[in-house]
Length: 64
Image (cartoon, rainbow, N blue to C red):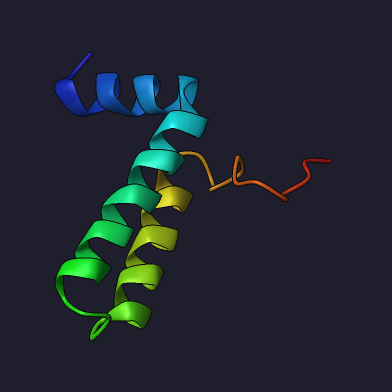
């Protein structure tokens, strides 16, 4: 098993923590850029969440 496979496996087991970390990171970058790239940062965070578990653990989301 390669390094990336291990990361994907670990991220899949801890979706909630990964999603929270991505949100916090995005917020910090947004803060440091003064909101200038808000839409691009949000889009990047959303895409990253999709790739690490579908962003399925965000508050308010309901799994069926």
